[in-house]
Image (cartoon, rainbow, N blue to C red):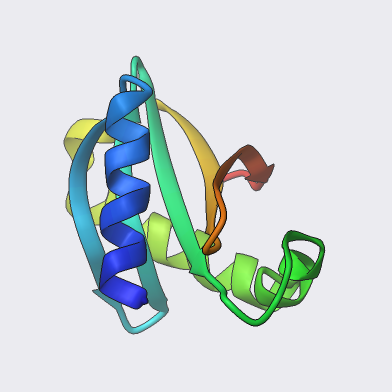
Amino acid sequence: MGREGENKAAAALEQAGMSIIARNIRFNSGEIDLVALDGETMVFVEVKSWTAYGFEDLRFGINPKKQRRIIETAKNFLSSHREYNCMALRFDVVFISPETTTHLTAAFTEEV
C-alpha cells in the first residue's frame, strides 16, 4: 500500500488546502515521503500505511530514531532548497488504514 498510501495522503493534504511540492525525497540520511506548503509553513510528512496495526501502534513506526532520520533529511532538503530557509517548519504524520486517513499535525518537533 506504499505508493497508494502516499497518493491518498497527498490527496487528503491537498483537500485540506496544502500544496505538495515534493515526493519521496532521498538523501543518505533517509527519506521523506511528502513535502508540502501549508500557507507560510514548510511541512515534512511521514506517511504510514498499516493494515495489520492500529493507530495506537504508531509510536513504534515513528520512534525517536525514525524522527531523527526525518529531521536530518529535512535539513539536507533545506540545504539544497535555500528558497525555503525562512519558512516555519513542521513535521506531520499521515496514518492510512483501511478504514480511515488520520492527519497528525506537528506530530514531532525539532529545531532545524
